[in-house]
Amino acid sequence: MADVKINKDTPWQEMTPGGDIYEAGNSVCFKTGDWRSVKPVFIPEKCKQCGLCFPVCPDNAIPVGKDQKRTDFNYDYCKGCGVCAKTCPFGAIEMKEI
Amino acid sequence: MAYNVKEIVANKPARFTAGHRMCAGCGAPPVARMIMRALKEEDHAVVSNATGCMEVSTCIYPYTSWTTSYIHTAFECAAATCSGAEAAYKAMKRQGKLPEDKHTKFITFGGDGGTYDIGIQSLSGAMERGHDMTYVCYDNGAYMNTGIQRSSATPRFADTTTSPAGDVIPGKMQSRKDLTEIMASHHLPYVAQTIGVNNFKDLYEKAEKAIYTEGPTFLNVLAPCPRGWGYPTDMLMQINKLAIDTCYWPLYEVVDGKYKITYKPAKKLPIEEFLKPQRRFKHMFKPGNEWMIEAFQEEVDKRWQELLDLEEITNKNND
Image (cartoon, rainbow over all chains, first blue to last red; front, side, top):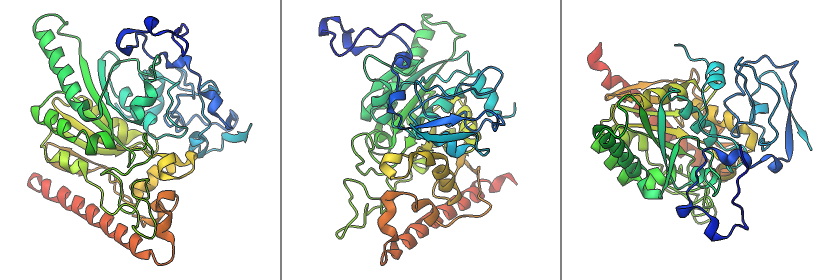
């Protein structure tokens, strides 16, 4: 997705009328990963692909492929809340200080 | 088709992307995402969103986290906006300006402040007029967005910034409003109370039913707030589980006036289990405040019993 051109230095003349946003889902250009103070670490050997962590992530930071299997975290967005680690019944996610 | 969380997450678009500015560990985004996944892939959706946490943090100009049509509307008129959009689409179809075979679903999201308090008259109106829409209230039990002020969804004794627990008052002095019951009293085709727990089956199935039931439907979803409730951010799913196991948040649905409780805990836990991890109830565990826990438990038991009775009464004629 192309970068969002409007920023805090944009003069009002160049902003969209009415504050409309023309591109859907462009918040992916805004990386929230720098909020994180602890980091989840995925341990693939322990993961049984049970699917319990897929829906709990508030930030959609657990990528799930078409093969219905998860891969490593998307640290661009993970805010480090730890909900996934606490949900995992197999200890396949560990929270680490950074 | 049996519910399969892996299949759904892998194949259905979330329609609610990453990069939003909700707090870490917020209970609302997983709920919103699962509800949006309940839509059929080919269907278009129009989402109207009352002011609240979800609106202010998913639509910070010039960014949006929504990939469907989305209207930000004021606190008091989310349901009215959605009903207007629904009526407009209907009219445009009638005039041939929109193709007949293209389906659009209308969903409104509102927080408990925007639903229980400020938006209730427009919600009641939209439901009564019979628009084909689904209203989803994500209930986090206070005005979290503006700094944890009490709402009519805040439970009794909760410590908020406008009901501070101390020597003068024991936290919020009034009991919480039962909005799901109010909506059931509108005699809607589908009303449900749900939560995101385990593999989100309950939430997904109720959302699917609500969205694809013709006419006005209502969903009330508990969405814990780590900041406002005062529990560690990683405990979201545990808090949700305790809410249903203590019967603080019973899961049920009302289909054409018939109640069905969709989860009855095998062992109903004492309410302390739910209250203990939360800082907003901390004062209830101080010596001399045992009466608060007793009063809370009494209220939960009373409401749970009422629900059991309602289920029995409304299903009586069927046997």
